[in-house]
Length: 58
Image (tube, rainbow, N blue to C red):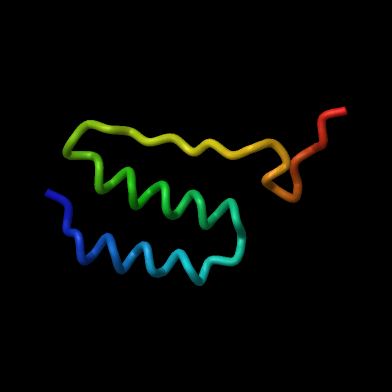
């Protein structure tokens, strides 16, 4: 069973991450760890143009 208080603390740390991609990946890692006992693997889906370095499709 996941350690809920520990996971909550790790999620709170995400608030201080400035980079949007790093923040999303951090949160995804915490959620993945929480769901591991249930054999659920979440994925990250973002709309096109969500990341500043992403090339614009023409």
